[in-house]
Length: 108
Image 1 (cartoon, rainbow, N blue to C red):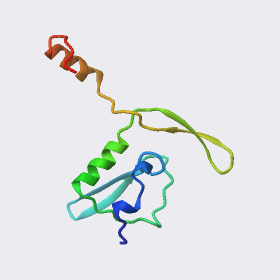
Image 2: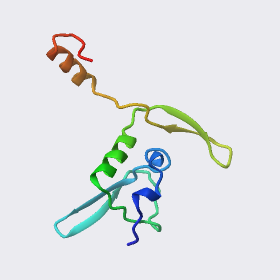
Image 3: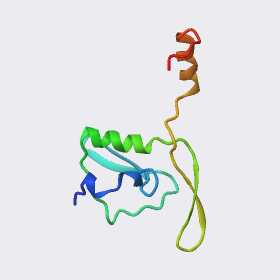
Image 4: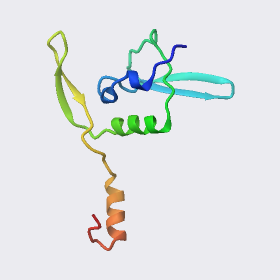
């Protein structure tokens, strides 16, 4: 299988132009791909991208999504709504647990 380097892909395309289509699973002498329902993906151009830990961190940080709408027109003139990240989202239960732990005072 052909390889592609991390430097050959624009980091800002992750989560926007390049999206998660499924997962790869391995173990017990098996390796298979599971697809997200209703994704019409083809794998004619499938490549392997070996990553270092810092590269994984960059991709995950870029893909961390808080839903924000962006409108984009495709070549046919149809306007599409894209979901794009704007900042990291922290669970409200965790926020209140930390606030309670700190005696309801700001630690910022």
